[in-house]
Structures are given as structure tokens and as C-alpha cells.
Length: 395
Image (cartoon, rainbow, N blue to C red; front, side, top):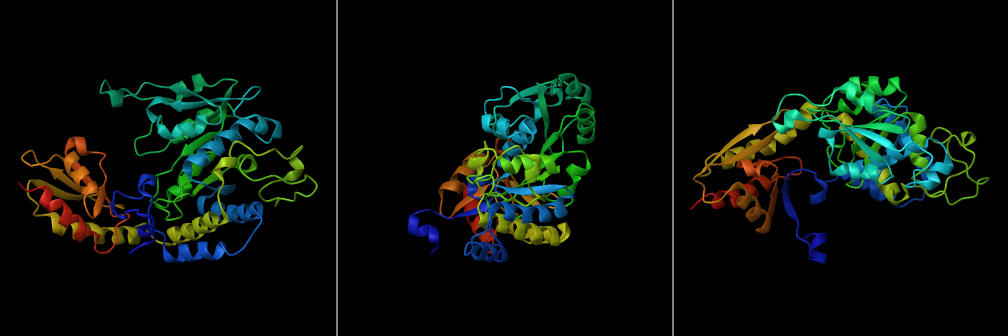
């Protein structure tokens, strides 16, 4: 029995990974204990975020950083910071962008559902490039000169979505943007591991980078990281904190917010709905320290144990072929053969609706492939998965 039984909610076997739709992953006992302890005290949130900034700066190589309520919140806050700078008047007007830069340039092939967070600020996304390589019409994608040509007096930022196939290279994007004094925001929500990526994007020229805290890092599901230039982080946190306080009474830590540079305190900003609690901040920091302390090789070895066991259990499955893929983060691919009694999609649906409910990665089911990830698997899950999968492959 679990706490979820009290409320009539099923628990699942999660072989998809720490996705938000499936409530993310599990908290390490040390992380959970830290959050429980944090919940028994009250602190000043600006001081807490200032303390977090030191930890995040060390881990990422940034000038400063803050804990956000997820990577999408980081994109919203980062975009708002690029649009308003340290002007509290502009902060008070968003999403009304009158009188400020309000265009964010994006490579067309990098557009995705999550850039809604950028548009929430009132920003207008300006697309560049034609992704022929995805359309099957050629090999080209956007190039640096197209980004430069799109920049103008209304350009607030360039948004770059990091992935293995992102083009142009981030270094080129940063060079072009910085030549016009335009900051670059990197969406690196799912770019961990390897742990070296914590520092990679800033080293390659990004001014701000957003990571998810509830996936690979192992922090609370509703947490994230925004790290980068100090002035931009200051502008971001000013649009996130509760600032219901008299000006003369307000004494934020100078390491995070330099009050002397402000003409006044902004009202609650566009990022106020992205509130992050003390428990989430502490949980993220402890999880981050554990993530950095564990090598990619040790992490991969842990995951490989689950995948190797699942492979052994499914190797003789009817009407299917299984293989282990991936390096740092291995996964198991089950290819459903044409003579199978069910398609890959039908198997995924049956797995989810059965008991126990098993969720796999369905991103390739239309090509007949079901992917099983070890990120959120527990001891005994491999046996549960195999017991559900094998009967569905038999006539």
C-alpha cells in the first residue's frame, strides 16, 4: 500500500523515464530527508536563492543562478530578463511589451511546445531557416548569417534549443548574437547527462541556460535551474520573488540583488506564478550535489543493471527482437515484428491499461519500436515488465 492508495490513484511501473507527464522520477532518501528538514524552518526566500546561486555558479561555471519551478519557468524568467533588464517599470508592464525589445529569434527546426513559455512574456518569436534536412528535401538547416539578418532594434534574445543535432553550432550563434549585443538563452532541459553539460553551454557562449531539476539531476519534479550572467539572473529573480515589502525595509543579499542599481522595487512580476518553495530549492541543491559527485560511468553502470536484466527476460519473446542501445544512458529497444498479433502501439496501450500499469517510451511505436528506459526502474520492475510484455506478443 502507498500514500496514493488513500486517494484512489494507481502507481505505475515507469520504464519511460522521468517525464513530467508521469510525475518525474524518484527522490533519493537523502534528498527527501533534506526537503523534510527544510519544511520545518522558515527562511527569507531572497537569502535562500542567494545561497543557491553560489552552489549553482560552482556547478555550472555561471556568474549566478537561481532555482526555478522547472526548465519552462526558467525560459519564461530568462526571456523576461532579456526584455526588461533591471527596469522595474518594464517589469511591471509585461506581457505588454510596448516600449521594449520584444522579439526572440529562433531557428525554425528548434520550435517546440515549450517555447510557449517564451511567448507568455509577450515576446514574439521570429523564425529563421528552412529545415530541409528534416523535410527530406536536402541537407541544410538554418545558418549563422540568417540569424544575423533577422536581428534588429527589437531583438531581445536568441533562443537556442540544445540537442545532439541542433544547427548552427552554439558557438556560431553566440558569436553572431554577441556581435549585435544580443544575449543567447539555451534550453537544455533534457541535456543531462553527461554532467559536463552543466558547464558546456555557458562555456560555448550562452548568456543563460535552463535545465530541468526533476529529470537526470534527481531533484523535485517541480524544480529547475536558470544560470548565467549576473545581471540577467538578477532581472529574472526580481520578476519571480514576492516583493510585497516596503522599499526601506527591503534588504536583499547584494550577491544576488544589488538594490543600489534599482530605482525602486518592481511589483509582482510575470514570473510570480512560477513560485518555487524552500523545500524545492533545498531538494534541488542536495540532488545537484549528489548528481555531480557521481560519475557518468557509475550512473551508467547502475542503469545497465536494470536493462541487462530486462534484456535477459525478453530475449526469447515471441514475434519481437530486442537490443540494448545507448552509452551513458542505456535503454532497451523492443522491435515488434510484422507477424506479431499486436502492433507496437497496441502493446503500449495494453501495457498502460493493465495491472500493473507499465509505461514505456512510445516515441517510435509508429516504426514498430518500443523503448524501455532504466531511469525510473526499481528492483523487481524488470520482472513485472517482462511478465506483462511477453503474453501480448503471443497468439
